[in-house]
Image 1 (spheres, rainbow, N blue to C red):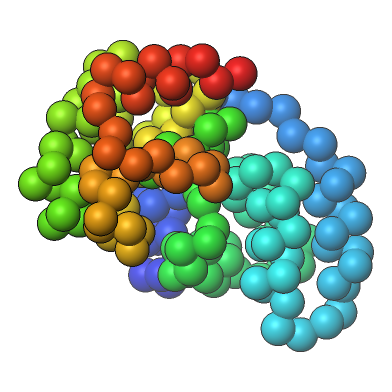
Image 2 (image 1 turned 30 degrees about the vertical axis):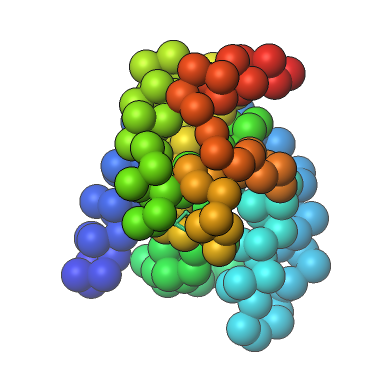
Length: 172
Ligand code: FES
């Protein structure tokens, strides 16, 4: 077993603690059949998997590796290299809090803290019910509106911890 493979297995172990899910493997078969015998298809395969499952589940990557004979370390290497891919299940609402300099001095740490406390979530993670995922980002280019939060594609300006948490709780 190569060092890469071992490293990939250790890394994959980090996110294998998540709840066991049953997956619709038929959708995976369709994706893999579409790219059967073609070269240079790792990225499109991963993109389609993520489109179907919302992220790249370990079980799906393992099966993809077996079916395509692409080493799991290679799939995992691509998945971790590109920011567009997610190895962890994500919440229905993606909350991005800007902690760039302007937002930081305007109070973004308090907003992060308020969200973490109110929604049982840690920055970089998801709430237990997978309603929310919280990410910290660094400058979204709207420093004049600091502190800035983005939920989905909606931008919130001059956010205040309590009122922003109230807004989040109202999301379906
Ligand atoms: S630092 Fe937050 S938008 Fe620029």
